[in-house]
Amino acid sequence: MEPFTSPDSPMMISVIVMLITIAASIAAFMIPSFFHDNILHPYSIARGGRIHTLVTGNIIHADLMHLGFNMMSYY
Image (cartoon, rainbow, N blue to C red):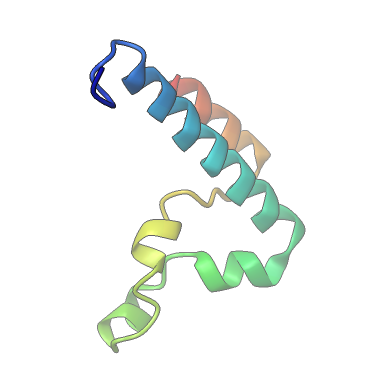
């Protein structure tokens, strides 16, 4: 059987994305420097730095309620 061809594969990928998002957001809640280093900052990107925030900015949430509602809608 080829990888990612079973019907369960999209579900597994969704669960992995959800767990990464929850872990990154909780880390950002607890460690302010982690939040600051990974939140999207367009000016820094325009100046040629912090390119990683294009990805990490999408998985960091502002607070627990924001994370909860986004995870419910993702589910």
